[in-house]
Image (cartoon, rainbow, N blue to C red):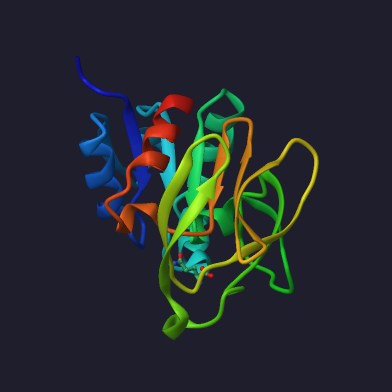
Length: 188
Ligand code: GLN
């Protein structure tokens, strides 16, 4: 049986690594660049990269409204790093295009600059130990409504779920750890 069709928004950033991780989990990943491709998937990952660039391209290709419409029909979305920024309703101190779907406020580059990138172990609520790489990562400085915190790093919120929306400030796809990909597949 073919695995779940999970799309990875492939406009810019770390999408190949998600594709590889999903394949290892038995899913059928596909790169998504058009509105039509968004109709053919059962879940969507918005990868890490540069959130301003991904946001502008998403809008230029008319994908932002389509992503919101598919989510309104129940399609799960997972945003990693820049993807988390694009899901947030609030971005501290910066104006930029975003999807504004999740009841979280994020602070871009909250963990410092590129040189401050690091890999670490995280304790994820309900999943146990996971690994993630932080690269100029944001953190969440506020959650409200139905948003639930799933992990902290150094007392900062770095993973949140709200119904069928999942956000991680870090990149699990750059490690060998498949636990969060498996979790997202269960949500999809
Ligand atoms: N700092 C980037 C941004 O603000 C995110 C970095 C990442 O996705 N690894 O968009």
